[in-house]
Length: 275
Image (cartoon, rainbow, N blue to C red; front, side):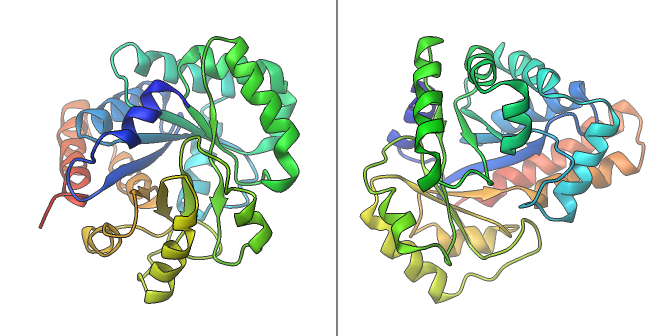
């Protein structure tokens, strides 16, 4: 595990719990992505997920799909995504994960992908279409390549409530990063209540060594308050992407845009503020 990611989960969380936020790289353009990543870091976000635009994002809902389409229309690529990471790393040490799909990573070249991600300052990967039990060889190779490049890269498992018991058992010895627990099945976005069944599922996962962070449909502070006693962090994606997209659609002048972005960062800070 990278020192940055280890520190995020070994030190006490500020506020209710740790907050993990998601942005799509290049939406609406690279410079704006860097500015918004910086704003998240300055707002106390504990870990940032940066999406790699892809034309067939099977686990993403309409909000993030639309963000990927906007980024791809701007000519966004994985190389340009890493340029965003490098620009962010010039000033900030907030842990940063790449979230994307396996096919474009393999097309880029697995060895080059891992090495370039590490040297740019990436701390981990979330790959929704990488089955955990079947991917041990690929992950082991990636871990070795990351170490050879002078860094550490955590592979973040996603755990669904419909997952097979063997899948959860396969995570029992893992201690890198955290487990991304899905609050519901299906795709990202929407809004979800936090029923007792979800909380019981999270309690059952405490057999794992990994910190548990819950995402999919987390949109407001009430949900965070409900989850906070049971988890090590919450993940917010579509709700943030949607807010920024609404600003961009208004075509505000630069000064007004930045002012309105500050209102969004205030909302980010409010998510884990103690009531």
